[in-house]
Amino acid sequence: MFFMAVRMFALDHWFFVTRILGVCAFAVCFRIPIDVKGAEEPSLQTITFQPSSADFLNPERGFLRFTDLTNPWSYGNIRSQGQSLVYGRILANNFRNGPFSQSFLNSIQAGFDAARANGIKVKPRVQYNDDGGADAPKSVILGHIQQLKPLWEANKDVIFTMDAGFIGGWGEWHSSTNGLDNNADRTEILTAILDALPSDRMVGIRTPHFKREIFNGSRFSDALKITAANAFDESNLTRVGHLNDCFLASASDFGTYVTPGWSRQDELDYIGGESRFAPQGGETCAQSSFSNGPNAISEMEQLHTDYMNLDYHPDVIQGWVNDGSFDEISKRLGYRYELQTAGLPDEVKPSGLLEVEFTIDNVGFGELFNPRDVEITLKNNDTGEITTAPLQIDPRFWSGGTSNNVQAVLSIPKDQAEGNYTVGIKMPDKDDSLSDDVRYAVRFANNGVWDASTGINVLKTDLQITQSATGASYQVGEGFEEVLVPSTLLLSGDFDADGDVDGADFFEWQRGLGTLFQASDLADWKANFGAVSGSAGVETVPEPSSSVLVSLFVLVLRHVRPFMRGPLRSPSVKCES
Image (cartoon, rainbow, N blue to C red):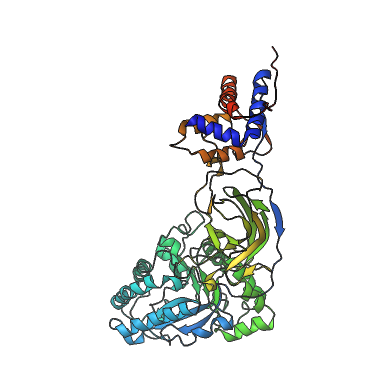
């Protein structure tokens, strides 16, 4: 079988075979190394993007509107008013002394359903009064949390973050009529909330000193806090962010910053350090010397503010409009991603490697804190078919005020249809229920990149996938996917897995013909002959010994010559002593 395959291949590719074998014979006779052209990958072309000054909708950020989650009559209008978030109050004043009724639980579910149907997310808060009055006993609160657990699990896709709530006036953790204004009860209730809430969702706590007391045992200690090292590890510590419902109201923000020995700036530094990896936001409650627009912007930058209530306090909001700060605040609340440059090739071959790099700045105050993928997309411009490859990067670390460089290598499947493609970046919602809903996909702040029909930010519209592209082909998987360690990929035709495609691979193919390899695999050997994994330019390729080369040359000639007509026209080589 082997000799038949040799004859067939040599007859079909006689010119190629004789050229290779002639060069090999020449090298054997004169004892010189064989230099071959390595696998030059297509060069990257730099694309520069222009920032957009538009204020547009994006999920999980921005101004939010006050609503009752149990009466979501306004949810159909939220997006048209320019918001994608709502504060979802759950007013439970009728259940201070007993469990929630099933009809009340059904109304909460209906609110989540309405949010999902209308492309928005909810920041829920359970409170037992709307006038600063009575709350509920701890035993009742803990029972309510257990009743809500199935709802939180079933609707985490539309939960943005959750206020700790439950305790005191307006659920703001002060003025409890049931004596819950102490660290032990706060800790027990917060722990119950975190246990009931899905582990990848976070909770906002009303004042920073409450968090320090719960996790450090003292309002004066910040020994345990969120850092880049422990961020998003789903521990209770890292799932608790910061909520300020009297932002900029006074020097202490009406009791928010009250720890002796801690200045306002100390509190801003503590909260801002944690809020790079956790939610921060709230509402204003009074005008003051702190509430002017320039100072608001300065403190939001320090705090990494993700959201703010648009409905309160109206005088503060109007003040931002009057001093010209409102538009900037509206655009910069949460994340705002601006592409700066991208590098992509003009062409790539099936079974080849697509290199992509891009620089993206987060010019917003805040960042993402719920899990989200970054995907590279390929759209066939003829058929419209889209394939995606998630990258192994976490955009939650793209903090406000940072520039981030991303480099990735992706494999093109062997059976990828040749043609013209559009390359893009998509950041869909992580939950399956919303991943295909473009209303929950992240839009970049650039002119001319957003495709509203697909939720893709377009990088390049004319990538050619063609067999004639430069670069080597590799033994890749069946899907379009990121290659984390490209150097571990084997070249197509590298049958002996030594990192290059040379004469030795021919013999490896012969030994495995009919079991490991097929006759058609020799086409890969021919196409990649001389390629060296990871090389660019001219490389010295380790060749088999002289006796092996001569044997290969004689073997091919012996079994092909009887089938040839006319004189043999291979390169002639005369060996010298």
